Image (tube, rainbow over all chains, first blue to last red):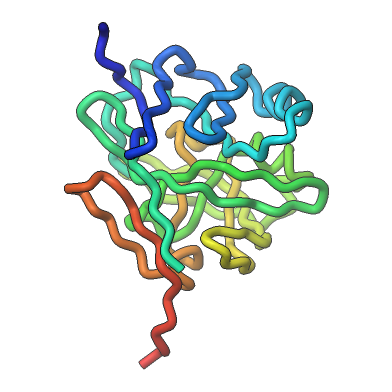
Length: 68
Length: 134
């Protein structure tokens, strides 16, 4: 199995984000519940569920280390 | 109250992201943002302002100096909620933000909290700051 390059992990599990690079994702209870290429489209999709996810624009795979 | 957030890992690098709720005139949004102790102010992507119902360019126009160049952003004050704390926070929105991450800077997001970066456990911990000013 290929090691995930992009993830948020804790004791409860991990959210793997590699395949969503360059997209907006909605994450709820350690799961990606929706993904879209714009935030507006994402939230339209999310609105149909009763969950209150947090959203993230997933960095591109080509992004180097961030020095902010 | 204490709240912990696991770091985001990208290859060999990790980033301290937390969930923060931004409350706009039209809508509210729970969004992941990077705690950036090197940033003076918070800067978010403009799509978020549009979603919240904030007209970006009505804010105060400011130039933000980065490592290589400066970018223009528009500063707003809006209610934010995190770790049970709701307060008005300065947030700039910039179409020139080149990083994927929204950035939470010190003024004034850091004021209500004690913030611990636990690199060993790869998590950031937010606690309410009850310390009085000296």
